[in-house]
Each structure stands twice: as C-alpha cells, then as structure tokens.
Image 1 (cartoon, each protein chain N blue to C red):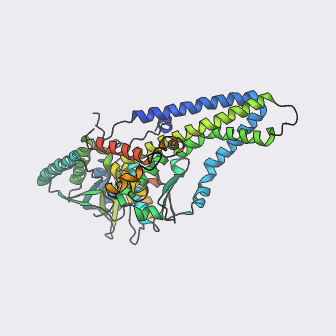
Image 2 (cartoon, rainbow over the protein chains, first blue to last red):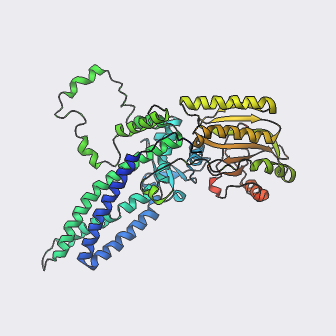
Image 3 (cartoon, rainbow over the protein chains, first blue to last red):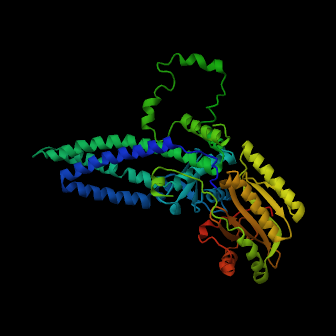
Length: 297
Length: 190
C-alpha cells in the first residue's frame, strides 16, 4: 500500500538546480576546449587545480574549524547539543557527525566534511543562547541536511573548473602582461575565455548555492516536522525578530518617501551575488511546507 | 540516495525499514534464559508529535484502540513528553509478548496515517541480575536493534557490556552493525 507522505515534492526547485548545473557544465566544456586549444600548459593548470581541490576536500575541515575558533566537544561537555544531534541523526538516518562548538556571540552554525562519515557540525555559543530548543533543532537539522546532501563535495566539484579559470586569468596577468616578444594568439583567446568562464561560473555557483540552501531548509523541515520552528529561528537570527515589526506602523511610513529607491529596491541586483537566498523567500518556502503539512495546500 | 539525488539535493526522510520488531518476542526468551536479563515489564515508543489536526486524531484513535485491547491483555498506557519535544508512549505489561504487540499497534497506526517517518525508536527495558537497567532500542529506519546500558553518572554508558551483549545475542536479533549508529537516549523514563 503506498503510504501518504506529509510533504509534497518541490519539482520547481529540482528543475532550477538541475538547469543551473547544466549551464555550469556547458561553460566548463567551453573552457576545456579553450584549454586544449592552447596546448600543454592547460593540462598543467588542470593538474595544479586538481591537487588543490583534493586538498580542499580532505584537509580543509580542520583549517576551517580553527579559523572559526571552534573546538570539538565530547558528549560530557555539551550533553544537550549531543543528545539533540543524536535524535536528529536517527530521524535523518545519518551516522553521528563530530560535534564542535565555537565560542563566539555571533549566532551561526555550519557543517563541514565531504561525506556523512567525516562530517563535523558546529554551532556557536551565541546561537545556542539565542534560540529555543525547537528552533535550534531546526537549524541543526538544516546543517545535517547539508551533510546528507554532500553539499561540500558538490560545491567543491562545481567550483573545480572555476578555479582553473581563475588560475589562467592570474597567470595571464602575471606573465602575459609583459608582452615583450611574440604574442601567443591562442593564449590570448584562452585568457579571454577564462575571464568569461570565471565571471559566468561565479554567478552560477552563487545560484547553485542558494538552491542548495532551499533544499537544506526543506530537508530540515522534513526531519523535524516543524517548518515553522526553523522559520522562527531564521527570523530570530536575522537580527532580533525584525521581520515581525515591533515598531508602530505610523512611525515607519514617512521615512521611506525620502529614499531615492524605496528600501529594498537594490535587492534584485544584490541577489545575484548572494550565496544565501533572501530571508523572506526562505521563510515563504517554509510557510508553504507548513501549509502542506497542515493539509491546507 | 542515488547520484542524481545528491546532485539535486533531494532529501527524503527515510521511511521505516521492513519491520523486524517481532524478532524481539523470541529474543526476549534467550535474553532471560541465557543472559539473565529479565523484562522490566515496560516498553516505550518515541515519536515527534506534530502540531497538525489529523496527527492529533490519529494519535487519539490509536490510544483508544490500545486502551481497548489493554482491557483484555492488561496493558497499561502512559505518555510523557521529554525536554526535546518527543512523546513517549509507555506500555506496562508483565507479558512481554503483549508489549511487543502493543508497540506494533502504535507504529502501525502512525505509518498507516502517513506519519511513519515521525517515529524515532522503540525502547524495551530489561533488568540484569543486579537490577541495573539494560535497554534494547529498536531503530525503525534501520530495522535493527542495539543495546544501551547506562553506567550511572553523567552521560556514561557501559560500552563493553553493550558490545558483549551484541556478541551474546548473536543472530537471534538483527543488531545494528554500524557502531556509530548506537545512539544513546539519556533519561529514559522506563
């Protein structure tokens, strides 16, 4: 008997993500053709970038943790956090990741590691103080979904050729700029193609990252069954519940008239550069999930 | 999860594996006869209560069924919510078989209602010869049991004992093979 599910599919998100990855692949093919056209040095660059990507995958965890001032904690040191993650791991069918805590007031959480087995989930002391247990659970489930989706691996691989393009561009600036003897036309083409690839892939990567954030929000809602708790956590993190306004309506209206652009008008352009989707969209997506769950949609 | 699912970040909460819950009915006899573990007469099923109307009515109906059959079998039902927001349905019955059946009634009702993925686990309480608690936890998503022996004191577990139990029970019980999935449950109320 096919059992009903409490959440529907989000086909649109899957389509957008797949399309973005297709575009990334397409411009990478252009880069590869250009590299091959320019001759051997392209292969050398690919090898260097490959080595760096491997290092990034295998060695960057500890560096990142140290950069954040985070420290792995034992169950005895952080019993609540461990117990919460234990339960979420059972629900998400994941092996237990390492658990780290960063001692900073900034409310934040992140996940590291190329595979679920080598993953680390880190929360700051700030976020643990700020959020209620249900909200914190939503945030941790979001991070665990990143782990389950292997987002670190996917984004590193997706960025692999962008890295190559960046190296070619830098190489061109350092060595091609001299221009004393014979100008190599094929290198000139490669240089220009690389700049193009670098720019386009940058925007595509940012878009991909935003889609994966939506996917992680969605996954978190499925694990906890409480989309609204995550939405509330997001609002609280985004500077003290400012989305549900505390200020009197009459006090806010006039000021907006003095701006050249209404507040928030620049967002369409700024959005292209963002790695995270805007808060409103994430909350709207979570509210749709809550509506599905309540059987209203 | 397939490669395409990883690439598109598709995430489904895993549904319960094929139920091997009833393996506990026979294993309990071995546990008592050869390992000296007596049933504590209590078992619990732990799930996330969702704040939706139909979830409430499913749980309500399920409780009614349980109380109905409990009249015949003598199973008592209690419930309590823990600090993590999970609900514990606690069944008490001296007949171990009735406990397993009762737990199955709860999980079946949740699954039929479409909320199977909300179940965290089932817990069976045993007592050893020194009257210390030994728990067997059933992970629905994995379809496997694992032992959990609190060692007294803050967040301490007797891993040696747990590993020995796994070896002793052998093939009679489907035991979780990956040790990193032997998740502890502190403060079990049974």
